[in-house]
Image 1 (spheres, rainbow, N blue to C red):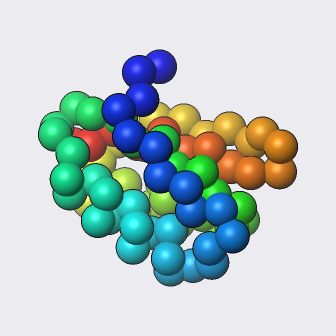
Image 2: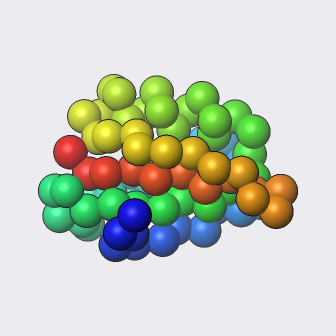
Length: 75
């Protein structure tokens, strides 16, 4: 998967990962992919819900080394 931007939100709790995601994705072009790294378990439901609400595409979620990786394509 081609990742255009990476955003490190490890150690941040809700709502900070969503706030940072929202700001970062606004700067991106439609179709670009953002990788968000986080440790907040709530992000597993918050990020897909945010994508659905905002018209962005939730591509994938992985878990590696105690952190979550989310892939979002700008709508």
